[in-house]
Image 1 (tube, rainbow, N blue to C red):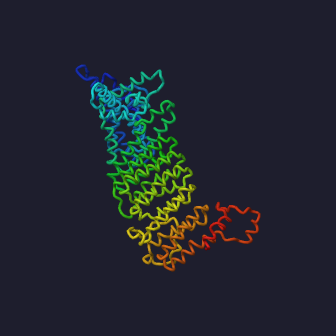
Image 2: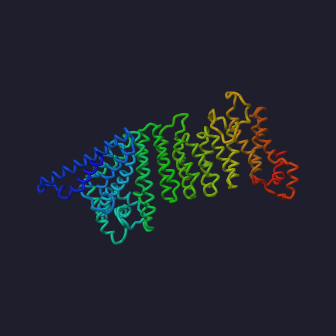
Image 3: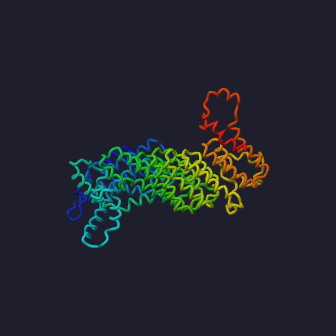
Length: 583
């Protein structure tokens, strides 16, 4: 019975509802009133049919019913005339109102949200241009006075890059409704203005805003569908603009309406963050975070930048929610930053991401908990970035953390040590030497007599990137362990590794720090720990360059400055650092 119902409603809407039907006053005939009532009743029937189809999909989950629901929504949407260069009528406005009313109810639209949300973008453009024109008129009326122009217009005007265009002209040119050829510009502009005025007269502007705000009242399934399709619409709109816009429109496309769907996605995310349970919100975040991650990898820096700005704005809101002990919600939330940093090929985007991290640390450090793990991970990736400018941006951030926020980072001390060693292992020698010096500084915090007494060191520790298996015998009880000794191990093992693998200046620096620590702080270690230091740190330094006579004979033809598989000058190590190691 679905298809006869659809055919009947569509036929009525096509035949009835002309301009004369919607005239008001004494000239209205009884036939016109009856025709108007039939059209409104037909729209009511469309609404009930869509609602019933959605309920059937929810109960039976059949593909045929999903197709029926989608067909009903698309058929009704066709009568809104929002697609193409068509003049809207009062009937099309009533169809638009019907769609908006249904969208504000908890109807399970599923994939049909994509069609609805795509049209909401166009409705918002039509409603916005009338408001901007009113602001422009108010501004023009005050041109000869000293009064301050409307704040609404001033804010809109500030977003323009091309000062020769009014805001209303910019919205029209970026609307995507009409052709931009010179022959049709005037006619299309006039048509757009008529449609805008008609929409403003009969559609409340707040009804669109309420639709996005109402997502907090949607069922879980419906809310996830809404967010998923909003991401799809946002991605498609950006792709269409990139594929279809002529070069001369590039400047115009940076206007706010280009990122309308992204802004609404951020708005919906914030609202649901406040009203939804943390568990369900993270189901929603899997969808949102994946979309923002995709934007961050976009080849267009403007799009990638807005994706990162959206992440930064959401991070600020998320930090305001107190994180419970033993939970890593912040770390999970900030995961897109780390993934973008790993997979992004554009230097400009990676640099902007590091600046975003710097901004969040500067203004929200007091609210950051497990988020430090993600931030330090991003800085570790920046440390090994092949582009020196990215690594240079990350270094002062890490340096300030170690000097200014060491108390806040105590639970993540091992992560910070790993980050410094990432700079040591990187390809930028000046930063590597600076990192070695800073490792020497932070190691002093682990000696109670040299500043470590005030650190609130947690136990058990977070997992280190360097194994501490040499510190204790198998089966030794946890309560007998000294937490500070476990913190020493990544530093000692990391320095030992660099002594045998790094270039000459760097390995000398690492050996200096290792020697100082063992001489000055060795009193902290008992005989068992000392034995394990020999086994896990000192012996590997020498074993890595042990000379095998047979192997040496076979390689006698190699020059004296030959390089081994690790990129280290084998003879250079023996001649350069071995005397100090054995001495």
